[in-house]
Length: 394
Image 1 (spheres, rainbow, N blue to C red):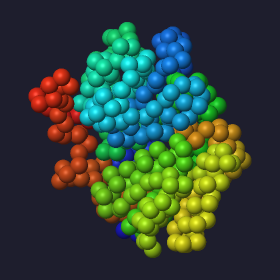
Image 2 (image 1 turned 180 degrees about the vertical axis):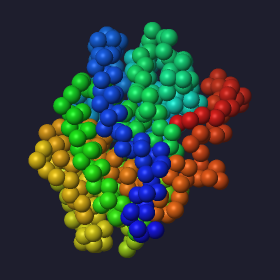
Image 3 (image 1 turned 30 degrees about the horizontal axis):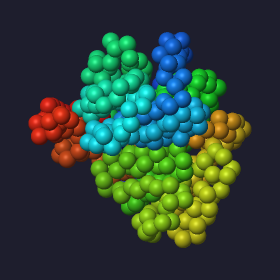
Image 4 (image 1 turned 90 degrees about the vertical axis):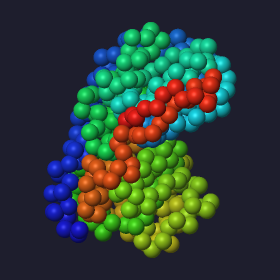
């Protein structure tokens, strides 16, 4: 399908389209939730943050795990504490490897639904293995098992995201960005001007829907997403969105800007498209710029796109440079990721429609499900005996 108008008509009827477009408003709501909870949240966090040997673990499954990968470098720098991202899928399968020391721990759990078996199992294992652990739960579903389990607990604090962030589409969009923004504000401090800037930048980007649709109309066979530091996690999430929404018909890969040369560059061919997220700091951005120039020399100017932060007076530009206005003043790659990912979400959605798939359900035969199936949680004390065989949403 190459008709941009027809493509947009197809996506406009989907929940995924609605959930991508609503994000700026959802971010404003999420920020308001943090502001209203600030006194109680600070009182809950204070005993943990006062511990110099505190370990903060950011955890979730799939897209929710990538929130931690984006946020951890930024929060570690801001808090001067040990902040690590560990997926629940790793924590549950190898708990003693990821919880090797009995040190004071703040476990921050991200979950769209809170019904994934790994979500609650991760918190249960932390309770079992650690002498001092507190839980910050960030979820989008008030009815989820994770919320129900932790809401009554004195050693837990639940930040419930706006109701409409609980995406009904197959791919996580509003849920991902709202939870990412929430943890950055909750642990890094309120920044109303940053939230306003992110929302305005995303709105400006979404005004360029036709340009993104035209870019997707020819559907690249392979897409590579690159970024450094926190933006490496964003590259990973962007690649997953492309894989999910195109049902794997577009091969998507991710790497760091500096690491891509060390073998993974072999994935590129004449039918590939590369998207490079540019870092805010001039030192780190120099490495992004180097790989951009190298790739453009090898695969062509129009096959390498950049997404970067611009000044307040900048305009979103199409073609090979996408500059989001008003973000240069924010100067935090993890916060930039909240707005940058909207480009990848909408691009993947348009590629899905161009392939004549159903974005809200790209796998009608059930090969991959929005509701994760077949997860068995085994007892740590008796690994031969499963204690739960449950289906759960990410």
